[in-house]
Image 1 (cartoon, rainbow, N blue to C red):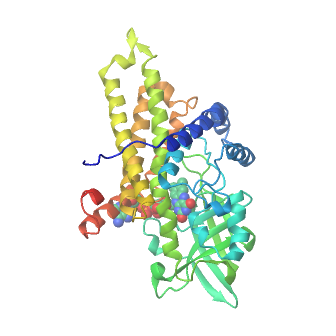
Image 2: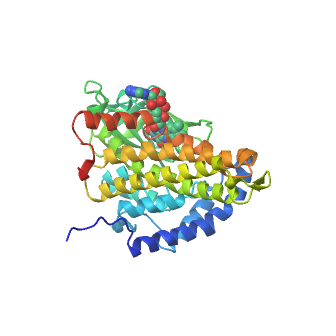
Image 3: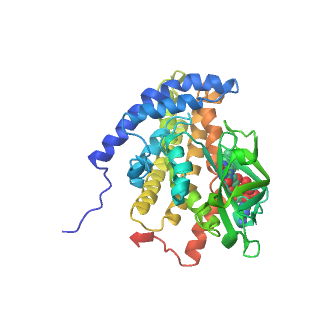
Length: 393
Ligand SMILES: Cc1cc2nc3c(=O)[nH]c(=O)nc-3n(C[C@H](O)[C@H](O)[C@H](O)COP(=O)(O)OP(=O)(O)OC[C@H]3O[C@@H](n4cnc5c(N)ncnc54)[C@H](O)[C@@H]3O)c2cc1C
């Protein structure tokens, strides 16, 4: 008999997803009104202490270290279920994430670095940030100029990084710096673990989103040789490995946000009345709802396909770029329609819609802009690295 394609989730996947959904509904979404109030006053939606408390509450349900290896106390989940869980956390704009995680490239740490950086980061006792972007090198990351030159048993780092998420709070940075200018950044960069106490400074960058990134300044910052992460010359590859992970998880988060937003639009369309009938009775509103559902559904399968490719141990870069490009665009389209359906209320800061409107815009920019995803997708095809239809032929 010809085998059919199975698009269903297993009972276990559904059970995990539903437990997470209930946690987010009970513990996170209930905080949204207060979070919006705080943000209107220029404060963070949740404090670091509250985040930790929530992460430990989620730990009681088993949610700790979604991608973290079991030897470090994590769940070591397959990428598909991890993507489903990122979608669940995406159902709220509150920047909640499950605890017990560390940057994927920190697992290149040696034994000493594991004790000093990796394990405390997983436990939430230390905060990291990842820094590759510079004022003159964003999309063109191979153009970075921040340098690290040997000085005795140490390295001296000089340069500036910009737009670094968490850069104002982190107590150490994973910094990609050029160690061999003759080879260029691609072959001649190295990753360093650089404590704030070693001397770098950070400056908050106000953005249209909440909790903006920071610029980091390095002036002869002395870093011991034992703080090289991975191998000398491996920095650019590690940078790309770090970025690759977000390429299917950002659109996964976008899925959750779009699902929640679309449901808000449906509820509003079914209650708000104009001209003596529900606004949902108008084709103009119906089409916005229909188009949103179609795009959401398409994005869902692209995210799952990218995550599934990761689980297969195959090169997931092409699938992830497709998911990131489409998923981020989808969220921007959906939030715009949902805001429109809510009329003036959608524009207020009473509801989370304008908050999401500002945040979703970032998803088209960071960890590879729309244009960079298009560049990757077309380059893969033009060079024959992938074929139309991918593994399905
Ligand atoms: C809020 C926020 C958080 C961030 N967090 C981090 C972080 O934690 N760590 C980190 O290292 N970086 C971080 N970034 C940096 C982010 O990855 C870069 O902003 C992004 O890669 C784009 O680089 P750029 O801003 O220099 O734009 P540019 O590279 O200058 O691009 C400007 C425009 O030109 C387009 N463009 C560039 N080259 C081409 C081309 N060849 N073909 C067609 N179009 C092109 C781009 O797509 C874009 O539209 C963050 C950025 C923001 C805004």
